[in-house]
Each structure stands twice: as C-alpha cells, then as structure tokens.
Image 1: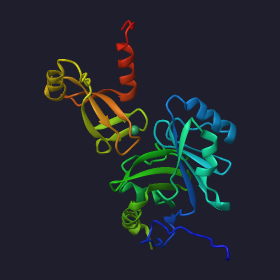
Image 2 (image 1 turned 60 degrees about the horizontal axis):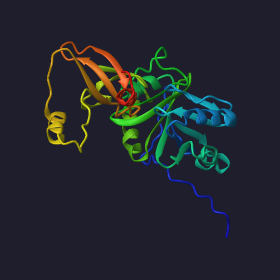
Image 3 (image 1 turned 90 degrees about the vertical axis):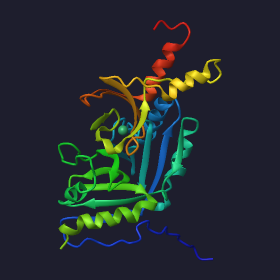
Image 4 (image 1 turned 180 degrees about the vertical axis):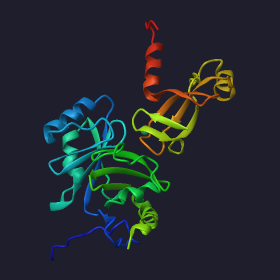
Amino acid sequence: MANTQWVAASAFVEWRDIPGSSVSVTRRDDLTMANLGVFEGQSDKVLEVIRSAYGIDLPRTPKIVTARGTSFLWYGPNQWLAVAAREQNRDLELELEPLFSGVASIVDQTDARAVVEISGHRARDVLAKGVPIDLHPSAFKTGDVAITHASHIGIVICQMDDNPTYQISMFRSFADSFAEWLFHSCEEFSN
Amino acid sequence: MRIQCPCCGERSLDEFTYYGDASVTRPNAFAPTAMSDYHAYVYQRDNRDGDHRELWYHAAGCHACLVVTRNVRSHIISDVRIAREVARERDAAALPGSTS
Ligand SMILES: [Zn+2]
C-alpha cells in the first residue's frame, strides 16, 4: 500500500478570498491545538513543568506566549490553549499529555475549533462591526488575548502582530456562520 | 451596564448571564426545618433599596461566576469578585474553631 496522507477538510466550506490590499483573511487549517486544564491545587506544578519544558511562564492574564514553536493562550482561570503548526505531523495532545500526569488534563482541540486570521490596515474596522471589545492599539496590543463574541458567536481573539493580524478561533460548527458575517464586514474594504 | 470582570476586564452586559441573589446560601436538605429553609432560600427576597449582591456568570467570556455588588438605584457597581473565592472564604469562616 502506498502511504496515504490524510488531510482534514476545512471547517470553512463557503470560503472566498477578499480582493484588495486593505484586509486579507486566511483559514488556518494547519494547526494542532490542545486544552490544558489545571487540577485543583496543582497550578504551581503546571507552571513549573512549562517553565522547564518551554522556558516560559504561562500567562496569568489574557495574553499569548510562544516558545519552541508552541503558543499558549490564556483560556480562562487556570486554563490555557496550546496551539502549534501541524508540521512534521505534530500532535499537541500527544506532546503535552506525558508532561502533566496527575497535575492537569490535556484535551485535543484540533478538530474542535476553527481558526481564521484577519490581517491588514482595515482589519480593526472589519472586526469593530461585530466584536464588542475595544481593539484600539491603546487598549488591545500584540500578544493580547480576549474571550468574547463576534456577531453573537463565541470567539477567542488574539493579536499576533502590529499589521495588525488577529487570530480568531470559534467552535468548528460556527465556522461558516462566522465567515458569512466576516465577508459582509469586509465587503466595503474589498476592491 | 458594564461589569469589570476580574479575569477579562470591563465587558458589556450581553456577555453575562444573571444567576440570582448572591446573599443566600443553600440550606442543609436534611435539617428538620429543611422545608421552610428552602422556601426562604428559593422565594423570599427583601427587595431592599441600595446595594445588592448578585451572581453574574461570564458566559461569553472566561466562564467565571462573579459576585457583583450593584446599587439598584444608581446601577453603580462597587465590587466584583470571583464567586469561588467568596464561597471558599465563607466556608472557611464557617469551620468549627474559626474566629470570624
Ligand atoms: Zn471574565
């Protein structure tokens, strides 16, 4: 038998690209994700494990930190979402599980969440039409994370760089509903 | 109305769900007075003027349950705390041998 490379179908089915240069949208179907949930009273140990394995401190406030090709997003009190590109068949659940035996639960989120990136100098204006939090650079900066909603769909939003680029994830089954709102919101900035 | 979530920062009301009066404590279901205790716990409210302590759930955010102190005349929120911490302090204070 020949080696078969399975590729998961995108959660965004009704997808289209936005013409023009003021805003661009990209599906991130290439990510592996896992939720890290700390067991009662074990948060110091979890922080220590991450410190020795990745050389970073997990953020205690809504932020994202990245080390060794893996990002950790604050995901609520004592919870984080680990995200990495799925190159070389990486699987974050398998990578993290052995590190946290007895101190935290690791649950695969790769197929649970759909991820999209919105970038460009009008990205903020696109999002302002549905995201209720203040994304002005004085209030929300590169590295900041927020759990909120967009057009009534629960999202986790994270600013990745100063372009700005925003990475947004939602439950997979909401992907096309979110995209429909996103395309409408982008309409006035496309050409 | 906007609530200052201790985890997420200030967010608008549509991210929260009201969970009721934060000043009542679930009674012991096995006490001889359980029937009247539960009647008071579920139904009897004072509806006073001024500050109320209310439970609000950050449903579209961090999923923390909060104890919000809100003045029902002015809507001014004077305090927001994570409900779990409030409950733990209450339970610790209720332990035998506790001075408070
Ligand atoms: Zn919150």
